[in-house]
Length: 243
Image 1 (tube, rainbow, N blue to C red):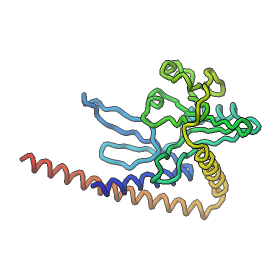
Image 2 (tube, rainbow, N blue to C red):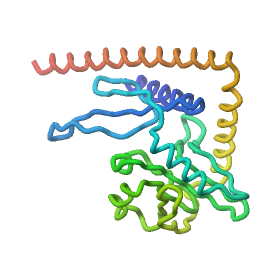
Image 3 (cartoon, rainbow, N blue to C red):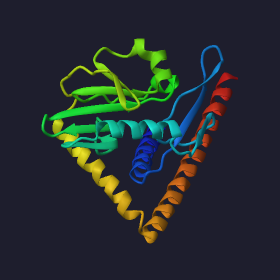
């Protein structure tokens, strides 16, 4: 069982990285029951297989998310500032640090890193997904309605943008991670974006990527069935043991 979990975890990370590199996004709604038998839903994740109590939907980013992305992009475009959306921090499955920040800027003249997390709902704000605040200055990008709901929960050193307007300045912090890792991660993510733009014009490559997606889906179904079979066997063994 442990071996299966290890293989399953590696498969998820590989699929998640593959889809991110090719601009395919998934939202996962995980249905579970708490101690009072109430059903709750967690917010978005990158990618996961479907299990008995899970449902996933392949959908694009919401219009509100896209608007906040455009706003923060416009607010930060200045000479000498380099920026990237969806910057992946860390490189491989074995890396202890492997996260993704919504938006990152680097100012070469001041040698400053700024990290931005875009949140569009209260559940998104409270999600278990880590806020990748490794920068010298860290910000939430929110709607005004959400800001009014969560402003008392925002740490004092974290700034806030309402669209393209900064309503709360961030306080300078020491980098939460090696600057070498940050620079390597930015170069890798910028290269990924260039490859996506360049490859989108290659019809043969698009067809190849679609075949790869089909292969990953086939693997997903294989592990899904294997998981269900093992789960059923565990349940049967427990019932027999109870007798």
